[in-house]
Length: 379
Image (cartoon, rainbow, N blue to C red; front, side):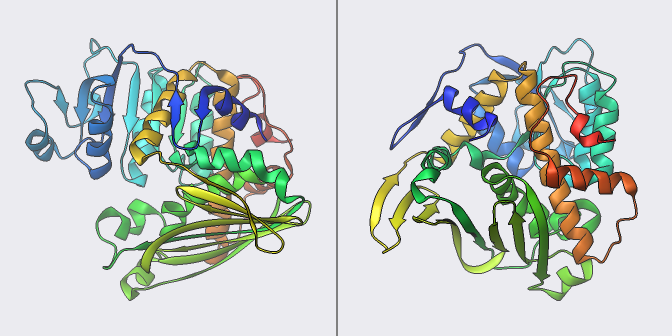
């Protein structure tokens, strides 16, 4: 189990039915960017009693005023209108992909704790921009939201991997049952930069790179449910094949327009199989007998609250911040590599090749703030 998971286990008390987190009762001053959007409204309702929101921000200022009480909150169209006297420590960003960097970079320069929706970045070029500005400042506090790794089921499964012996194969199936064609900014390439891979797949690759290490190769095929999406080059379905060291291979299958919603993670070992569902997992022996079955009742809201609490708890933990940033760099690099293959883009940038080589071969992560980006800059 890697260091990140060990740290999480110190913070979480995991039982069959709940997850309890030890956190401070002190309210944090925060701003919420993208507050008028679907995700922004969800985070506001989730966190309004936990954080002291000093400003709610959205480019659709009319909608923002319709949703929120302007006598209670400062409502702004852009962070550039933030007065220097407005005291806040935390910025939560929930915006379309194309707007992330525009808002994140100035907040890094303002030395604020940032908790932003995935992806960390669109591609390698964005990562370089983050690294370049981070070099200028110390004590960078940047977190990317991916809540699945805060599901106590996955932590429990990681502790049980030894029960199935040497792992040799896995598959992860993730289907949504969206009935109609994709709408909004996700239907525009210059705003989303990809289809289900960068949207749904980011969450699953995050899990896979947490469970398995030393990636050797990746390949993929994609398809389109709607011709309009094909014209925009925004895949509706994708199948990804992974090969790791120690003879571990696996497949991720992601679909946006299936007949029903489904999420299933299966890990196969020489002694048995682990089958993971969103709220339970089972361990089978080679004959198909159930050896262990555990069910969990944690809600999505509880999981997200635990994630926010955990990030705030670790906002001054340079070692964790370093590992977290580098992990998400790896997720971005995997996604970029897959898109280059699918779109027949030749990677002629030598620096990118070094980054990919680092991803494939790195055994350890930097352990200090000063070493934070060293493995991304090999040679």
